[in-house]
Length: 220
Image (tube, rainbow, N blue to C red; front, side):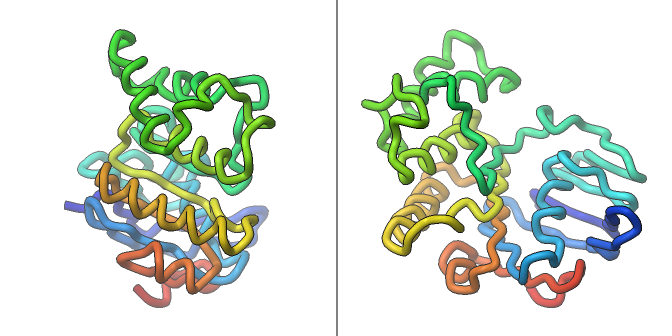
């Protein structure tokens, strides 16, 4: 079964084509990486899957559900069961680590009584349990990255999107967090769609590497 399927998806910004009739199918549980130079459409494609952007043409499916078609969203972003890690992490400075995860569960459908245990388990899984009361400014760069991962994963989404989450890190920390992403994937078995322009990183993270050029898929 395909976890993500795009059919003839196009997108332009102010008459500038960004995606050109892209069709793509990603299997359930896969680690798929979108790779290619800056400006080739990787992030736009990711945002269309998430619902943060709306394609001009084409259809988007998550599992067997059509979530966007004919230039409009049919399912709102928060209802798609997707976890997302942004390039700038988008952590909220006024919230503790625990509050980040609690807030992420607000649309999850998980009973309130079960959320505390789920938050605790996820903080333990990313080795942040003792930092539950810390706000982002009190965390190291690597801890902030792990918090962003935990927030994306705490609702146990079937699909997780990551937009160059490691691009601003030094080599040692980047290598460590690549291993963390692979470890979490092996435990939680989500479908991963990951964006990077780094070919080496793409080869490490991806079981499948999809290469894009000028708004089109050219390999993978």
